[in-house]
Length: 242
Image (cartoon, rainbow, N blue to C red; front, side, top):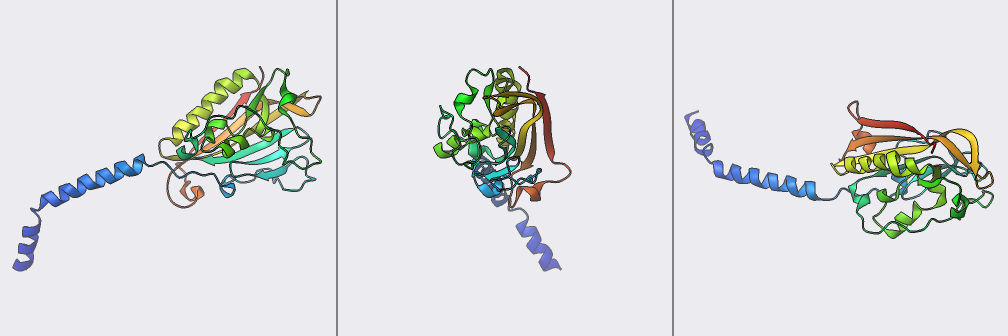
C-alpha cells in the first residue's frame, strides 16, 4: 500500500501535460465546429419524414405522382399543375453559395408525356409569383442542383407579399438554424384551394401554404436516429391571398 500511495502521489502533481491536453482538446473542438456540415444532396435522403400521401411513381397517377431527385422529393399533382408537397433535407454545406441563383425557370420535361408541363410563361401576367417550394438558397452548392429547384414542377402560385415576405423570412430562419450545427428536415406545400386558376385552368391557385421543419442536431447515422421528445418542430400555415 505505501508503494501504491507513493506512485499516486508522484504522478498527481504533473499538471502541465493535462493543461496542454485541455488546450489541444479545445483547439480540436474549435476546428470541428469550423468544418462545414456534410452536404445532404442525395435522392435517398430527401424523404426522411415519410410519404404522407402515399404518392407513387405510376405515370397514370395524376393526383399523386412521386418524383425523387437528389435535391428534393415531391408529390406532383398533374390535375393542379403543382406539387401537393415537397420534402428536402439540408445542412449549412448545401447553402455554400458556390454558384449564383439561376436567372431562369425551366419547364420540367422529365414529367410523364401524358401530364401537362407547366411553363414559366404560364405565370406571366397572372398576378402571382413563381413561388419555390424547395428554395433556391437551400441548393447553391452546384449549378446542376440549383437548376433543379428552378424546374416548374417545384413552383406554386404565391402572392408577392408572401413569397418575398413572411415565406422568405421563414426560409432564411431555417438556414440560420442550420448554421448552428443542425440538420433541417422540411416538408411544405399548398392547401385549401378555392377554385381559382391561372394558365387557362391548368394551374390551381392555393388558398394557403404550409411548412413543417424538424430541427435535428448534427451527428452520425440517420437524422431519424437523432429525433427524440426534445426535438424542435416548426409548423406554420399562411394565407396565400395577395
